[in-house]
Structures are given as C-alpha cells and as structure tokens.
Image 1: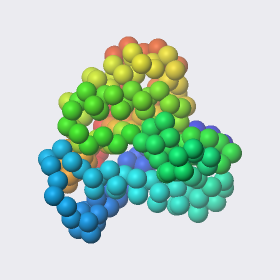
Image 2: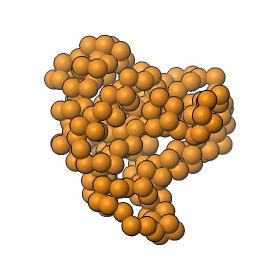
Image 3: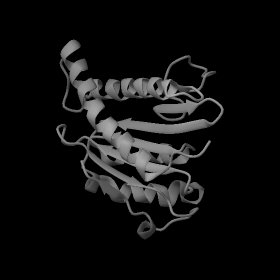
Image 4: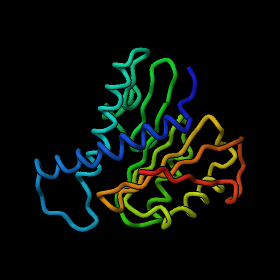
Length: 194
C-alpha cells in the first residue's frame, strides 16, 4: 500500500473536514446546549472526533483493509488519544492519519500540539485549530525545524485546518520534497482555495 501523502488526498480531506466538522459542531451545540466560556469549544472538539469516526467508516466501506480510530489494543479502551488526539490506522498498513485538535486561541498551545503531531509517523498529519494561519505559521515551521525536522519525509504530509472564521475554514498544506533537516525557508505551506 502506498502513502496517502499527495496533493489530491490532502485537497479531498480538507474539503471534507471544512464541510463536515462545522455541521457536526452546529448539530452538537443545538442538541446539547450549555453555558460556555469564550475559550471553551466543546462542540468543535466533539465534532472533530465524530468526523474521524465517520471517515474511518467510509474508508472501510470502500473495500480493502478496514480503518480504525486508535489502535485495536489501545490500553485505555477509548477512541482517540493514542499519542495524539486522534490516530487513524488501516489494518495491515499502520498509521494513515494523525490529528491534533486545539481550540484555544494561544499560539503557544497550538505549537505544543503541533510538535506532538509532527513527531508521530502517519501519512497525513492534520492540525485543526481556531486561529488564522498567519498567527501560527512561523511557530509551526519552527516546530518542524527544531523538533522533528530530521525525521520528516516525503511520504508524510501536513494539513493545517483553521476555523478562526466559523463560516470559511482556512486550509494550508505542505509535503516535504526530501528527508530533513529543514530550514524555515524550506518549509512552504500552500493555501488551498475554499
């Protein structure tokens, strides 16, 4: 089986996340209303997890080896939180997608989550957050350069989905053209049109 780290797979995944996560979050908020503080985004965290459950089901129905959210023998018996917030495995292949979901407005918090994401192996590494990309771009590049730059390869891709504007998500991606290490200039995220 080949890696999913290609531009078309990233475009398809970004489109699905952008369309589906917002609807799931809205449905959750309508079904389970609660008082929340400005930094609390429970419905969005839930929506990202539900999206990955649906994604695994759809990939498993396409034929081929089934997909699973989290490892089969995960010690906590919970879905998600296997090294990162969400990890999707394909039977007989291993980690296909890793995801960190960060709904705080702190660029430092987003960078910390991205460092965890960048350090794991998977075909596509997805960061879902609520800032504008320009607020965190340098921090994400530094995380790749400083934390795991020497371990990132062309068989891996990064997809960064920003929901700063809840009506129009922002998607940026990068696939390394070689094995690391990388300088900041080597890391050029591309913006996907919405």
